[in-house]
Length: 91
Image (cartoon, rainbow, N blue to C red; front, side, top):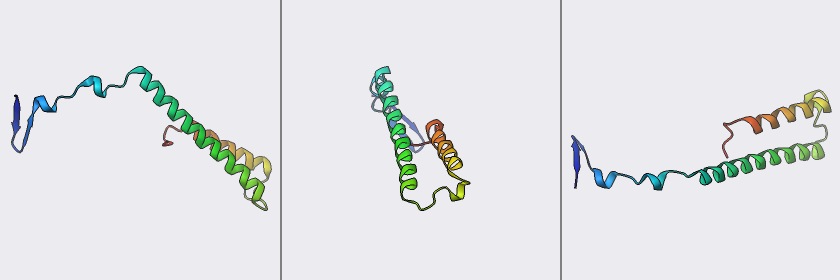
């Protein structure tokens, strides 16, 4: 058994070694993970679309603060595009 001691740090190198095959992600796992992220992002965008519809259906004047219906939908589309393109959207 090989042991290393560096002052207060001491470890057994054999016990600390990791099986890289256990922690490496093969290509099919990576593709499945990416598909899951895309599905989650699609779900976020779908939820946003539903929110816009609910606001339009229930708010007495949803367009007032946006300068009219066209500008309301332009702003909603801008936010939708940000959700789709932003890599910082955590899913």
